[in-house]
Length: 330
Image 1 (tube, rainbow, N blue to C red):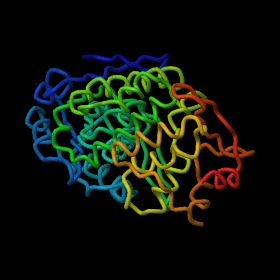
Image 2: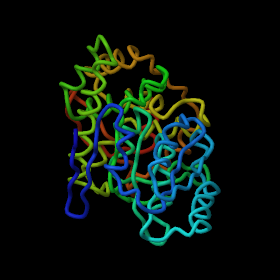
Image 3: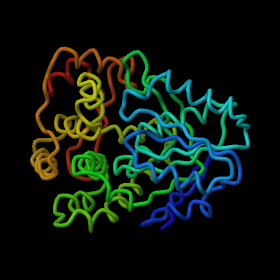
């Protein structure tokens, strides 16, 4: 399946299929220097497959986890490209989850003012969310995604076969992002997730549904000037929780926690039930450090923070709230 993403300033395809990584030579331009970026948590065979199909492959493997999205690892990636003689005609390929996609995409955006970037997401979370839309970044001074750029990939390859290697916790974390999108934009997709009897059988349809939501939003608002803020449902508190927990919780788990305070009493029981179904956390550990992280929220305006509120499953509204008002919801 091919899902095209088109706007006035960019266009690329999202290619979805089972066991399609082996077809990368036909899907991507690998007849050049190719920097493959992966991490220690990703099965080596995925990066090795891409390297075996590339004319001049170069590998960078970063440590697994959010802590690798730092200026040191970012600089290392750039140094490897320089020492290997990469030119503007070469490319970077991310083979991994959201961390790998974020840091390698940002490196591609900066190297010689931008070289081709391909994304091959290997987690459910990155397949349904972070690999699409061009957000790239590293964390800086303890603030998540503080330094980054909007830089669209040339193509995204989603091989659903890689999900067979993920444990249930990783799958649940990814599902949280799909739940987020369904809660704000697609009641039918939400119902599919909450009523699924066999997640493995339903995953292709869930992935497709979530991608189509994000594609539509990104096409209309590539740089988050308005509508794209809907994708931040669950993230205002979620990012603060993630930062305060220092990696103890997965990103999707933090997003799950961040959704509950921003929905109506009518909606909350359904969201709570679906989160519990997939063993996602539902109780926020309220502490003083949360407010300090919320102050760094990128949706901050002079009057407050733009939040996303769900009154009915499948619809949303933006609300501008102060930090104190947000803390009162927790």
